[in-house]
Amino acid sequence: MYRPTVRYADVYKDYVDALFKATTLDRNQIIRAALFNAAHSNLFSELIRPYLRKDVPLPRADWSASDHGLWLSQGQSEERGGGDVNGEQKIRRTEEATRRQQPEQGRIRQVRENGGIKITIG
Image 1: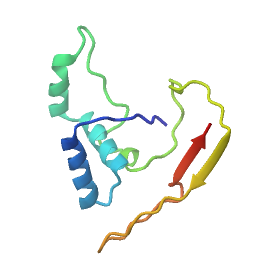
Image 2 (image 1 turned 90 degrees about the vertical axis):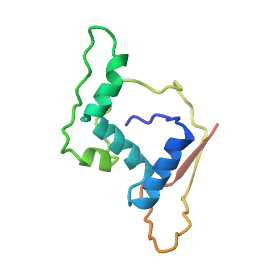
Image 3 (image 1 turned 180 degrees about the vertical axis):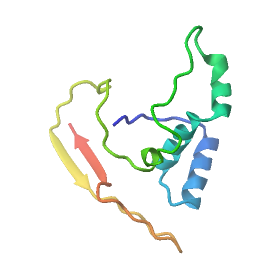
Image 4 (image 1 turned 30 degrees about the vertical axis):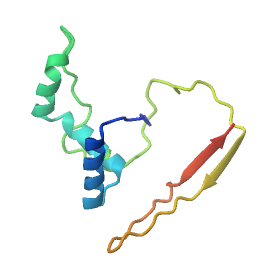
């Protein structure tokens, strides 16, 4: 599973937060949905085209526009290339704590079983 750190302007953060509050999707699903759709968007292709390297075509997505399960779930898929950017790590002690969310008025939120916070010290 690829886990990038994404940095973007506050205007994008505000939009993602507004979508989060307006839907039942979490923020990761919202970002995945945007990337999922970008691969099939003519607007995105035209936006990227001026930045393409010479003689290198725009890559095609490995998913179809109907594969909605891809962005909806965070399923464990087959590990692909790349490696840990931090190199080899030694874990001395691990503590886990459950995430607590304050209930919002008129809205019920469920925390999935595999959620929570994992803190590694060392």
